[in-house]
Length: 241
Image (cartoon, rainbow, N blue to C red; front, side, top):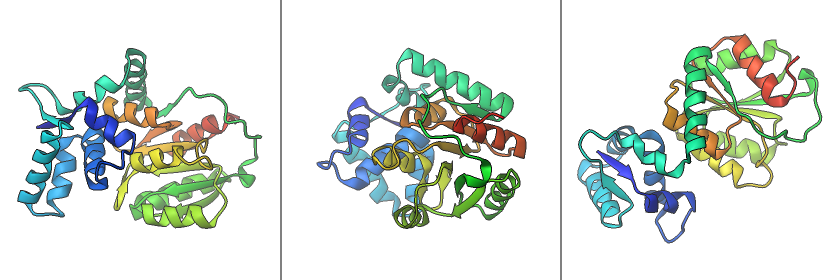
């Protein structure tokens, strides 16, 4: 079992170009997803011995360390979060488990209120059934819907179109993950204040806290109803009526 050290976390968060991109992505994946999922995904793409060599190289650089017996790997997230952030993450995770939705307490985006028919929602979801359901529910509420099914499609869409009014972003995508996408958006002045709701299948406090720290405006856990999803969209957009 591995966990990311404070030096490793700083390396991927700061996007230190002295550290190879592959290592930064691996560090981010272990930090966010936990070592088991991140490493299994790598083993599905590369020879096992190569993956082991990468891990030991990261250990030599003191970017990761072995977890002491009995200590969950995901506790590696905690040092980067202060007591208040951990409390918020736990509250958010509890709300997700209880109601299926969580609205982050963030300053107003400063955008004028729009009617649903004038509001564009971009859905980023790689599962065809989940995408169809989200499209149906959001469209039924009167919003204009656009959809992409991968990080690559999202990149092309954002380069070719005006920014949407809100994005529904799946955490796990076929060619990347939503946390990476969210982090990239927040570093781009054009999308730094774009409202983003994360779609997830789990309400793990560590992952929820990471998304909130990166700037997520809300969370919805799958499966969800139209009322839950649309209610959160209205809350994020500042239009609860």
